[in-house]
Length: 320
Image (cartoon, rainbow, N blue to C red; front, side, top):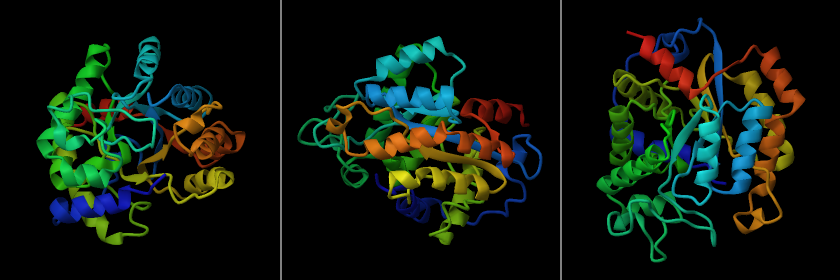
């Protein structure tokens, strides 16, 4: 796994969104109706739809653990299974994991819009680029928007409306014009987009210069009628699977007031998952942590309020 959000946010925010921002007196949690000081958390499972094992992990983390949300990679082969689950569980918080890269060596996927429509997003194998940097170098914002709309169209064709849109490998944050199209598609369809815009405590630990730009970005998205996160923890920085539970417990102890999303990639890896990627042990560790008694107890002890993107949107709709 790669820690992409910090450098990606640096590029995008300093390139196009790092403007003067007024002081954020209230957290977005308060703006959304929670009491002052409330610590509200979304434990979010990325990469549903990527594989059968990924689907099993996402579902288990939500049904038996503290995970409250997931999002689906619509260009991937195992989307139908996750879509069928969504239809049987209409209250589940299931978003669209906007996917513009295909990072693994032999397990790959191409754009839903088709290579002719988005050639800049497509490599010589007919797949999406391996990295977000390659996508940023070769694709245009029109192509990113076209592919995002194609992914949303597939969700709609399956009878689903995503509860939110987020970004696989942070690709939309690599360029300001990509980020603008991501926000545009979400706003036009009334779908929340994953954007940090508040205290940015975890995001700003290593890059405090980002905080002003993050706040300006949050204000922009809030003005469009969409909810905004106060902070985002990417889940990176933990090198050993054995340390994942401790990282999550530390997060729960230190999370600041506001709405914070913690990203995981919970998976129940079978013996064949190694043919997909080599991160199975870490993904399993995330699943085991989120379903562990220790993490459940910490959520209760720390008086953490667990929420979903669905609830964020409902609360935002109620704000004048």
